[in-house]
Length: 82
Length: 82
Image 1 (spheres, each protein chain N blue to C red):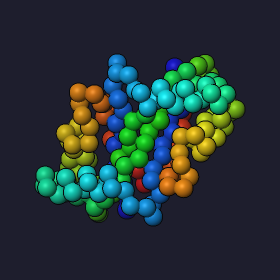
Image 2: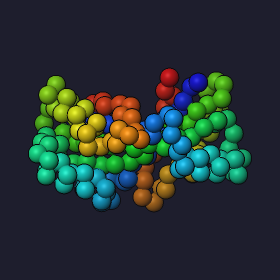
Image 3: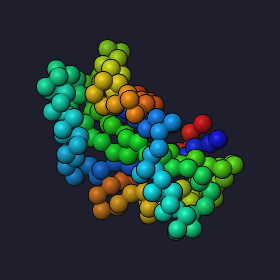
């Protein structure tokens, strides 16, 4: 069944304490080459039936209105996955 | 700067209470067309410099060993984003 993937990330200007914690873990574990880690959410919406333009528009709407908090987060992707 | 995106999802056979809560919210709000919602994590690893094959291999390794818990989660993607 088709899936619509919605990606939500903390806004770039905000601190991301979870991401900072992972960066700290990388440093302690000797993992090198990554200057920053940020952690967001990935939503997989399973579609019954076909992905129509209307349904994709509805997914974009709920991504902004329900799945993310626009004060602190940005929707960075709404895409159909197979 | 290039970014490596790591996507981690709860294993398909596990319940996902957060996803269920969002499904319930969709039903209450009259959002139709989505039969299931699952919620995972999206990690953005900022790379200093170039993405080499070694660095991508290191990202795959930390995705499995540090960024996910293989008992309850699957790494579903490790990709370079622009």
